[in-house]
Length: 407
Image (cartoon, rainbow, N blue to C red):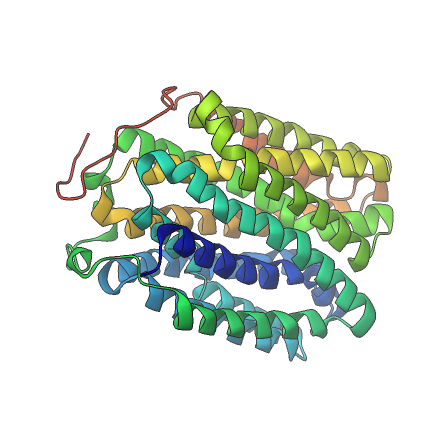
C-alpha cells in the first residue's frame, strides 16, 4: 500500500514534469508568435485564449474528479496537454498556435485536480505545507522549464521546446497511469451527482471562501499581465533574448522553490495564512510597480525577485484557506471553481494587457510595457486591501466530510 508520503512525492513529480513542460514555452511563445507576424493585441489574445478555455473546463474537471476519482482526470487532462504542445511544435501559421492553445487550455484541469488530491490525503493542519509542494513544483518547473526553453530555442529554433514539452507531457500522463494511486475513496465518489457546481457555496464557510476567491481573481489578473509581457518587456527594453529570459525566469523559479518548498510551513505556523497573504500581496504590488522603472540588469533582477517572493507567499496560503473552508465531499469542485476564477483572470489579464501594450509600442522604448505592468500593480494592490478582510486566526476549524454547512 502506498504511504501518504509516497503519494505526495508522486503528485509532486507529476506536477513538476507538467510545469517543466509549461515553463518551457514561457520565454518562447510571444517571440514565436511575433515570428508569424502577431501584433501586441494578437499576442495578448494568444495567451488569453488558453485561459478562456481553461475557465470553461476547469469546473467540469473538478466535478468529474469528484464523481470518478482524481487519477482518471489527471491522466486525460495531461494527455490533452501533450496534444496541444505537439500541435504548437508543428504549427506553420499563427492560427495553428491559437488552436493548439485552445486544446491545451481545455485539457488544463490537472492543477485543480492535483490540489484536490492533496486535500484528500492531508489533514487541515497539514494542508498549507502540503499545498506548498505544488508551489515548489511550480517553482522548479519555472526554474528548469524557461531555462531549457530559452536554450533550445536559441540552439534549435522556436519549435523545438514545444516538441520537448509534448514528450514530457506524454511521459507524465503514463507516469500517472502507471504508478499514481487513486486518492478519493469509492464511498466518497458521486456525491450530489445532479447538483450545480455553484452549490459549493452551500457547503463552505462563505466569508472565507468568497474572500479568497475574490483575492485570487484580482491578484491573478494583475500577475498574468506581467507574465504575458515579461518576455517581450525584457527583449524590447533590454535586448535580452530567449536564452537570457529563460535564465531570469529560472531565478524566479528558484526563489519559489526555496519559499514554497522549504519555508512556507514554518512561516504559516509563525504568522498565519492571512498575514502571509497580506504580506505577499504588498510585496507583489510594489515589485510590479517597480519593474518598468528598472534601469539595468541589476534592478531588473531585484524587482523580478520581488515578484517571485510575493507570489510564493500568496498562492499556497490562499489555496490552503480555500480548501480548509470547504467540506470534504466538495474539495474537487471548490478548488476547480477557484482555478476557474484564476483561469478567467488569466484570460482578462493578457487580453487587456495586449491592448495596453499596443499603446506603449508606438511610444519611446523606455516606457515599453509600463502601462500593463502598472495596471497589474494596481489590481494586486486592490487584492492586498481585500486580504485585510480575512480572519486573522492561524487556523480555520475543519468542516465535516459527512454534513454540509452554510456557515
